Amino acid sequence: MMEAAPMDWAIWSAPVHATLMFVIRDGQILLIEKKRGLGAGKINGPGGKIDPGESPLECALRETEEELRIRVLEPRKLGELHFSMSDFPDILCHVYRAEDFTGTPEETEEAVPLWVPIEEIPYERMWSDDRFWLPLLLMEQTFLGRFVFQGEELVWREVTEGVTIPD
Ligand SMILES: CNc1ncnc2c1ncn2[C@@H]1O[C@H](COP(=O)(O)OP(=O)(O)OP(=O)(O)O)[C@@H](O)[C@H]1O
Image (cartoon, rainbow, N blue to C red; front, side, top):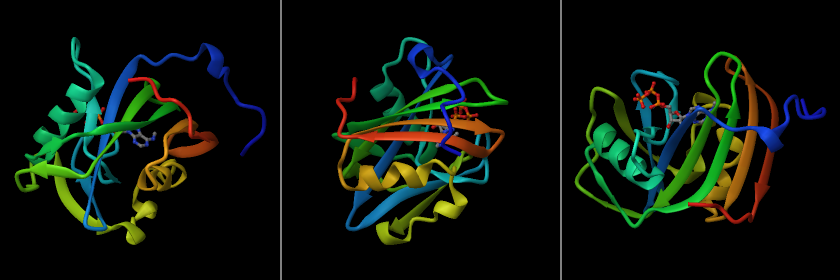
């Protein structure tokens, strides 16, 4: 790990744009166990692919509503994740944080809700990049993370904090 980047990020662009939403309330974070699709069986935040004509923020709100049946209030974009993948199209993921919502998280066909104390985040059950940027989101820091995966193995990473994040 951490040789020269195995790809040229300056000219990288992603065919897939997606979102992740993390609600943090009373010292707990609202996660999901994803039941199907990419990352099925893993724990992550709610989120998914951006639909044509949709903004990243609209997608994050829609996916959270579809997966957990809650409406998130006042989300803020804190980070961006750039994934170079070997066996999936590359993904640019917009990452949001919120402190409040309306409704009650429910299990759906896509996800099981999971409230976890922020000191007990189950990184071993999550994508292996998450441990490198989720702590920054918890501290309300902005971040840009770039990751290269071979299958599900993380083979290269670079995380920059305190950067200006575009909408
Ligand atoms: C490689 N390391 C990774 N680390 C952390 N999170 C990752 C990730 N790779 C993908 N993600 C997230 O996982 C969701 C995929 O979900 P998504 O595109 O919805 O897949 P799914 O097949 O379910 O598609 P639909 O959008 O439901 O059509 C989406 O939020 C995306 O940002």
